[in-house]
Length: 200
Image (cartoon, rainbow, N blue to C red; front, top):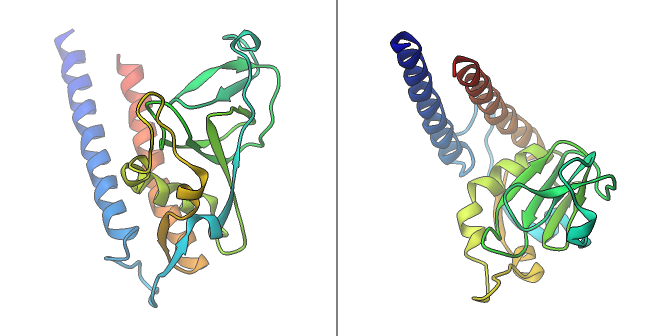
């Protein structure tokens, strides 16, 4: 049993190390401080609203949700609010929580889902060819996005404030290259977390 405990502890330390490495990569690559080989030129400033459309979802009654539906209902929290047999949003979309204690939380949903009334979904335009790049740079700026919240009882983020949020963006080829590096780091962390689960 002690041998297994040691293996689990080592794996947990490795995962923590990989997460720190990814955070460092994000700090360098998503600010333009370090450029990948073959890329140069200035990054341009854009308002988020000029890079994508920002749409608010449709609220479902709690009675319409359960824990066995085919599709997750993504609302103002970090995880699913429940499940339903209905969906209103295609897979592989970026969401940002609009209201509640978690407003400003950035997520990437890989399956069809129901976008709730306290959730924004983003649709990229031609300036951004890479949805994954936008997710990574928004996740990197998540704390700043959370600072856009207004109100005290039930805080929320106004669409106009989100639309005016400024991002520094490279050309499409560099976006894709950066997204590939960060996604590879994510996959490595996911693999180690799966192995940790198996050890436990």
